[in-house]
Length: 110
Length: 110
DNA sequence: TTATTATATCGTAATATTGCAATATAATAA
DNA sequence: TTATTATATTGCAATATTACGATATAATAA
View 1 (cartoon, rainbow over the protein chains, first blue to last red):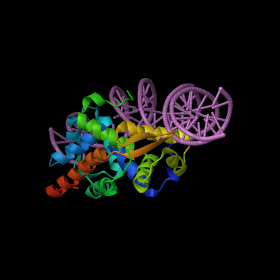
View 2 (view 1 turned 180 degrees about the vertical axis):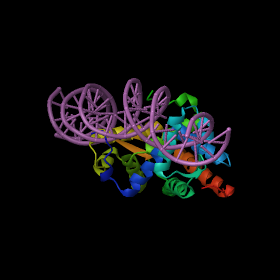
View 3 (view 1 turned 60 degrees about the horizontal axis):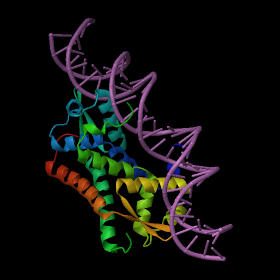
């Protein structure tokens, strides 16, 4: 007990869950917002922007990277992180489909 | 340490994080998919559909409800759960904006 | 070479999540 | 009233997440 029963769910369900989970922390939402706002995206800037210690930010960046939400490029000593458009498009579509689906149904209950 | 430093982030960042987090488990993605698929949405059906025990499903439903993703209506002995269109629309827009934003920028790095 | 600077990893404490058996509650049925 | 049925809550063990100080790594600068 304690661990998620990943093997009982579909690949798609696990994929969406992993992506959503990686966005499920305000620091990681803040990182995404910051990457959208700025043109350059050096890791150090993100550390300065967030109210968390450098190792904590590094850990959050790692989680976003593992999930595929962001990509990292080495730029000399620094690392440039960027949003992975393809993956975010999948999430956009997941939520777009849900809203579309509900609106078509005009459901009676709730 | 250990607890999320919620107070250091904006209301919006916390809101999106809470919503995303609540979807960040395959069982909860499965619940959402199921509610979209069926016309009626009785809790017992969800319990039968998922590979988890009844108390565990009840807990997942509670989390989705707390986050605002679903709403519950009492129907005699049973409870009818439905997706909250308004909240899902917010998520649709969050991800829609991100993709739109990236496409406009045509960023150079990564 | 020895700094310096930027980022990652390690180790660990505090806290949260997951899952379920047992039990409680609340509504209808007999 | 006493079942029965449907859902929620409690309690707890297993596991995961969050946060950060200390330290490691890796690149450039002096």
